[in-house]
Length: 115
Image (cartoon, rainbow, N blue to C red; front, side, top):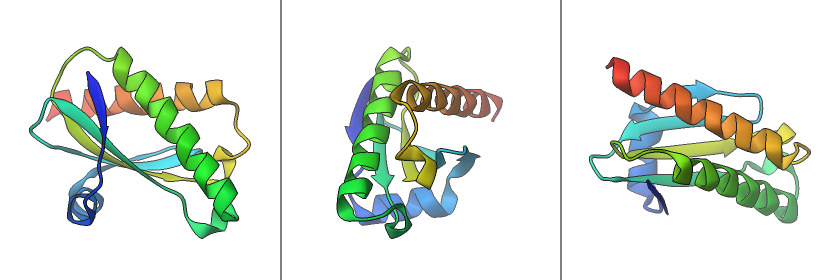
């Protein structure tokens, strides 16, 4: 499965308002089916994470963790994901971020199969 960036503000707003929620100590995630064959990801980092350098690093690390786990997924229905970094993201080991991303994507797949 491929991963792409979710860029349009309108698309992000729809995911945020209508998407299912998955909470984790490292991030908050909202997901919504998009009818495509690709998973599109938007990552946000609030100012409470610190200065721009810390926010950008947290965004890059989360984006890469999810990208690596999305690539490992078998093909399936596409989704739009909006991920909001939490303060623990900055200090977490990258292996922990990948594990959390894998758990979140697994939970998302289970929920999508149930509906």
